[in-house]
Length: 207
Image 1 (cartoon, one colour):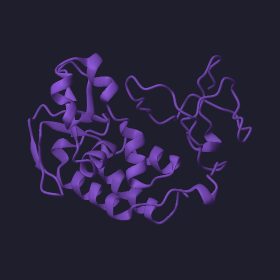
Image 2 (cartoon, helix red, strand yellow; image 1 turned 60 degrees about the vertical axis):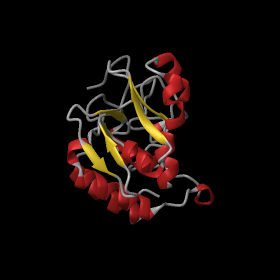
Image 3 (cartoon, rainbow, N blue to C red; image 1 turned 45 degrees about the horizontal axis):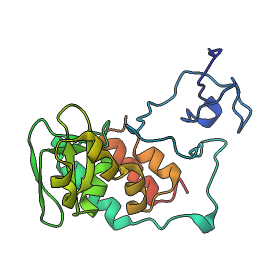
Image 4 (tube, rainbow, N blue to C red; image 1 turned 90 degrees about the vertical axis):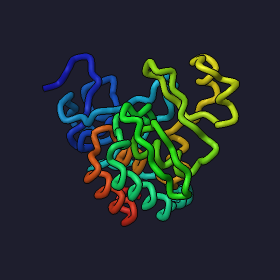
């Protein structure tokens, strides 16, 4: 059943998250519906970026010459960490304070206490020892340079300009294409889904 005012999802594109102003897919020409679209997790306070490629029957792929180099070691390390510490894995949030006040040891020996996050969030925290989780206790949480903590204090207005874009940082750290990042960072992924998607990424399925 189509909706007269969208947004629409294209069945031919297997539920792409792209949004169209008209009830037909501009990529494959298929009839679009509002059903079957996977949940999206828009980053808070982040301006809209460039359109991500669709996937499936009418896939839009990046030129081979522009593909980033996949960092398999970091990808495997992040997955191993998430699987070993389910208590701090929260796929629906880039980063967030852990209400369990859980303390976890990072692969490099650091200890992080009171943090939770999705696959992308932990990929950045594992790779960037210079960052720390900042939270105002009211729902806003960011990764900011540790050197900025004292300067920021408890001010959201001061913390946000210092914050790191988790999605972009994780994509660069892991060497993912837009399509790989879209699949891996989906808010609905379970840990079993993440393990399966990582194997498919390593096999080059989404390239």
